[in-house]
Image (tube, rainbow, N blue to C red):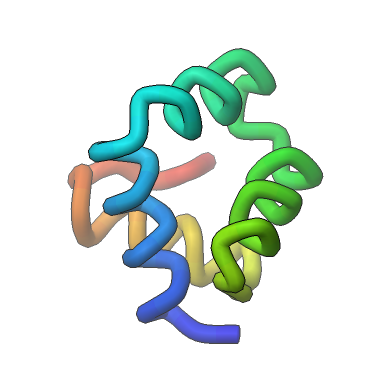
Length: 62
C-alpha cells in the first residue's frame, strides 16, 4: 500500500470519466474505491487516499 498509488488513483479519477462516474455514484464508498483501485492494480489505505485527496485537490476526505 502506498501514497503513490493513492495519488495515481486520484489522477485516474480526474482523467477517466467512467471511473469518476462510478466512484461518484457510490459517493466515494470505500468498498467501491478499493474495488476500482484493485482493478487498476493500485493499493492504498483510507488514510493514504485522504492524504492524496488533500495534496491534489486541497480537500480532506472527512
